[in-house]
Each structure stands twice: as structure tokens, then as C-alpha cells.
Amino acid sequence: MVFNDRIFGILMIVLAVAYGWGATQFPEPFGGSEAVGPETFPLLLAVVLGLSSLYMVVRPDPDNAWPWSRTGIELIVAVVVLVLYAMLLQPLGFIISTALAVGTLCWRMGSRPVKAYITGAVSGVVVYLVFSFALDLALPLGILSFLEVG
Image 1: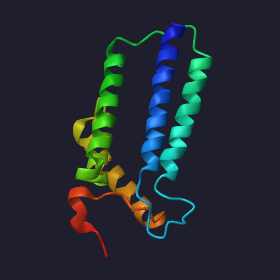
Image 2: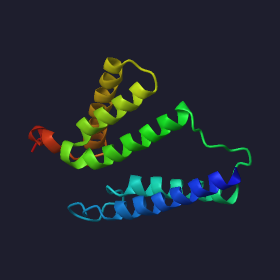
Image 3: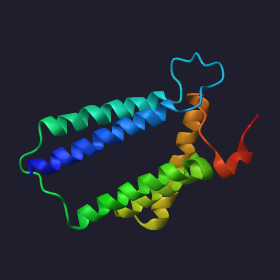
Image 4: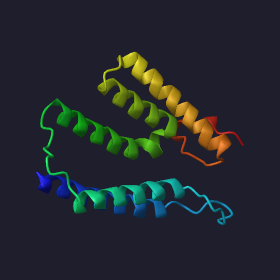
């Protein structure tokens, strides 16, 4: 099953490169000379993903088998949710898309639906406030753009 890890590692390297390239396509913030811009965190994630994926290719787990049971299906659902999250981030905005993604993932992990989506909503609002006010980084508001201050 060494082959499975290598295939997955190569796919994740491709994802890391695409994700890193996408991060460099963010528009330059006003002023343009900030050391930490909107691309910093995604680039850091791309580097970590690339390095860990490279490790999987070079040193695969010899006993690895694909989880084609319920776990495999849940992994596919999680990937679909994250892809939809990325696609809906701009039109729906950070708060709503994060609430939906986190809520769905919590629900799929066994939480009751109402509690899961409340957790998602609280997570979306808290992370938005941290990025907007503590880190002074803009996140898309999407359909909630009427909430923008100044």
C-alpha cells in the first residue's frame, strides 16, 4: 500500500502549488508595503502542505490502506464541503460560508445539526472579528456587505 501514500502525496503537492499560486494572486493591499499581507497565511499553509506531502512521497507508510468504508465517504464529504467553501467565500462572504462549512463538518462528525450550525455561526463571527479588528486584515463580507463600517 506504499503506492497509495505516494499517489496521495503527489496530489497534495499539486494542491499545495495551486493553493500557493492562488495566494499570490490576491490584489495588493492599499499601501502595498506591509510585511504581512492577505497572502501570508495561505502561503504558509501551502509550504506546510507541500513539505508534508513531499515527506509522504519519500517515506510512505508501508501498512496504509484506503478507507473505503464510512470513513472514506466522510473524507470525500469533507473535501466537497471545503471545495464548496472556497467557491462560496466571495459571493456569500466569510461569515456565512464559514458558518455553513464549519456547521456541516461538525454535523458530519456527530454533533446535532442545531448545535453544529450554531458552532459554525459563532466561529464565523469570532474569526471575522479577530481578522478585521485584531489583525486588521479584510475578509469578504459578500451578501453581508451592508454591515461594513466606514
